[in-house]
Every structure is written in C-alpha cells, then in structure tokens.
Length: 302
Image 1: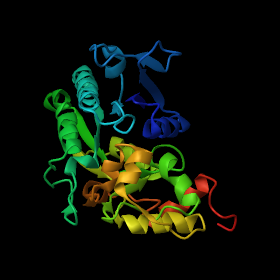
Image 2: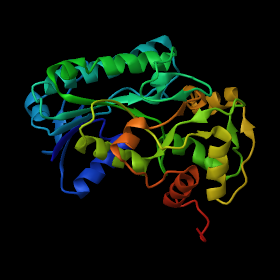
Image 3: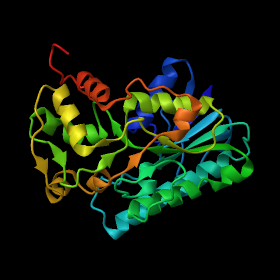
C-alpha cells in the first residue's frame, strides 16, 4: 500500500509512519522544504502548491497538517493561523485527491468538535459545541468537502487525549507526575476521552482497511475523570497523586493547550466499536502502565 501523510513529523504522524513502514508499506511525507529523498514531496498549503501526481498515486492519504494550538499564546492572529492552516491544508489535499475515488482520505479532526459538555454522553452523532476549538474543527472537517463530493471515502479522525511516553501531553505533564506533585488539572474534575498512542496508530490503520466514511471518535471505550487519570499515572510510576493544580497555574506552565485538557468530554467510540476494533489498552490502568513503562518511569518490578 502507498500512503501519503501530511504532518508526518508530528507525534501521531511519526508513529503511524514507523508502523506502516515496519510492514513494508510505502509512505510519502508531504514537507514544507526541499525533499531529502524519494519518500518526501514538497508542498505549500498557503500557496496552494502540491504535487497532484504524488497525492493521486496514494491508496490512502492521512492529513495531520495544521499549526499547533499550544505552541503560542492564543492571540487573535494565532487563532486565525491555527484555523486557516487547517482549512488551507485540508482543502488543498481534498482537491488534489478527489480524482482518486477508489482511495481513502483520513482527514484530521479532534474531540474539540464537541466543545466542553460536562457529563453529557457523547457519540459521533452528537452535535458540535460552541467553543473556539469547536469552530476550528467544524471548519477543518468542512474543508474536506471536495473529496467527499467526489466520492472519496473520507474519515474524520476525531482524536481524543493521546497518552504517549514522549511528546505532546506527556512532555508537559509526566515529569510532574513522576515527582509526585501533580494530582489533577484544575478543580472541575472533567471527563477525558483518551487513547494511547499505540492504539491510536492501530485504530488509524484499522480505519484505512475498513469501509467506514464519516466521523470516528479515536478514543478508548472507557472515558475517565481527571482525578482517575492522574491516580492511574501516579500509581504506574509508584507515586501517590499530588495536588490539584489551579487552572491559572496550568496555563502559565503549559500554555493555551490547557483549555482543551480542561474541557469535559464523556465520549465513547461508537464507530470503532461497531467495526469490531479491539484495544490493547482499553482501561486507564493498562494505558498508564504502558505509558510509564515505555517512558522508562515505571518501578523495576513492573
């Protein structure tokens, strides 16, 4: 299989690329610089530049492109960049791939679609929220319409909180958990829809091979309260959970990305369940043990 990936150097893109290549699939990464070999192709989403022959040669295209939400303070200009970068890249890829009607497009999305929903039980059929992140995700998904209209099987990958041993959420919070000084994010004890990086990659590959089109919540089957997440991570590293850190302190330490972590989303993976996907880390205790072991933080006895 030949797969074209945008955002291949990010947390999920890197892991997916490694997994596919380990099984002898060909992966072409879209890059915003001169290619450094035959497995890279240069593109410029803002300028509308892409090699259509490369994109249309793919059996599957996976789009993770977009400016990081948590990289800078969320000024009005950065908000526009976060949104427009996703719209531009997705629209360009969708138009380039539209003639390949026998292929599949996995288009980037996020649980931010639902906004902050408290204890409401969410599924792929739930309505969108009304937050800044919801607005971004709605526009992000809509930008894939050229591929949908052309008949390309398009999957909107609404990823949840990705638990990984390195990078992303882990890079910011695991050091605090390791020292036993973090016991919660804010005081509201929100629900988290989560998945391990390991199962995220497996789910993406499962969806490529499936017949599903439309949104899919890429999350584990057991959402957890924030306190339960922190307790599980702390236990996996042999510590007791520390203190609940106020939201304002978290924003200083972590940045605007904390808004997403503080949004309560009690969601379930209806599509993955219906398709028969099975998780290697279905519970938060299994996930926490895997994360800390892979990060080299688990006690030797584990």
